[in-house]
Length: 100
Length: 410
Image (cartoon, rainbow over all chains, first blue to last red; front, side, top):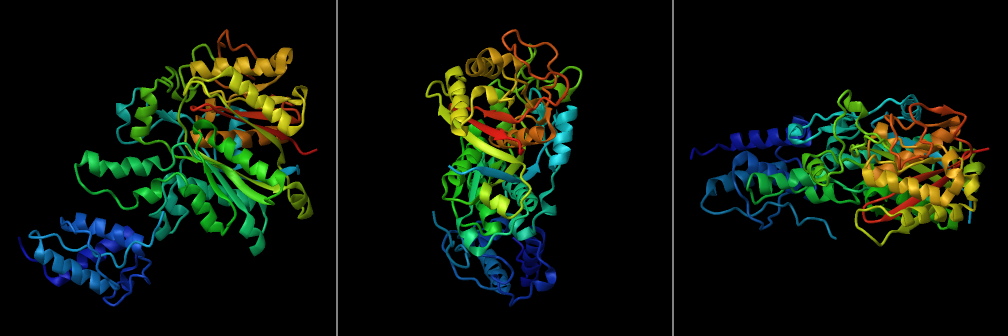
């Protein structure tokens, strides 16, 4: 497998967010907070689903804390480096804020 | 019991998106039924539907749009239109008690159909994470509540084809009895997925395509009827206590007099003359009117073999010898069967028929079934025939029969 540079990962996640979440690329700075981008816990679940499709990878369900766009990029980049040896922990920024 | 006024109408329908267009299409007998254009339509025996030209991106910003099934998009847009039509501003205290009552038969079936595609169709272990939130039946009601900040009862009724008549009736009950001053009530349905259409097809309930014109395929009460045609859309009304409506100088579309609700407790799918007649009688009792005060009926009139004969017999039982002189309109010939939204759309058409004094036509009724021998207003609208008081019938698989009694404003 050809390893990706950090720039490639960022470009692809940026493209996903622009296409699926209709976000303005200008807002996607590395320190942009997910909360400020309108990506809540439910949105994060959707983003991860789309990331798995885009990168052809499977993320496990162990939650880790991610708060910024840059952290998402870094997390996916690291997860890619470990694929397919083991599933990466699931990068939910926080547990789903839902209940029944 | 208090009087209940209908002060707002909102529509997203195969016949148009406002009351004027929808009434004019129904009056003129213009059908919204056509050949269906969806992926896999060629796999249907008769690819027919009454669909709605509707682009949700024109009505919702991307963050919210991603969370909305088409059924919720219809519901929220129709509710906006109803509230705009009502022209009422609610105080914070009023919003704390305002109610939302929604009927839907199939909820977010498009999202569920799409969501399971990865699991079954692609043999993936993953399902799109929004499927539950988009597919759940109470999503349309929830979104109406969220958008408007209405924090009173937020209820969803799923009684198949009578869902939205039940929703309107239950809202009426709460306004008439006093707990609520204002409610929005109606129904929404977006059932035009391949899976849903194939399921209805499997029950042998769908119409075959008319040889001369697909738009004529639904033929209620006709000897050549072959079934129903699925439709999509939403219809909502704003219900207010009469006192509140008058006090604020609202334009009142009509008075919801009462609501009859019965259950067959018999066959799961076969209509019951007893149950349907009992629902009409219950509506008359709730409205406090005699049978001879009913001037016209909007029939359930699906165009299926079983319904049309049973409904004819039920009307005869309730109205006796006078049944043959009551104009009966089956508007599903034009807008198709909106399932959980059908009752609300037909209730609105009843209001409009009364307002315009026009009995709406039952189209495509060239040769009546010998067992359907009442006055169905065949071929064309009848001016001056709607009278003052109407019933709007909705009957359902599962046996829930709901009838709304409505009166024109004097």
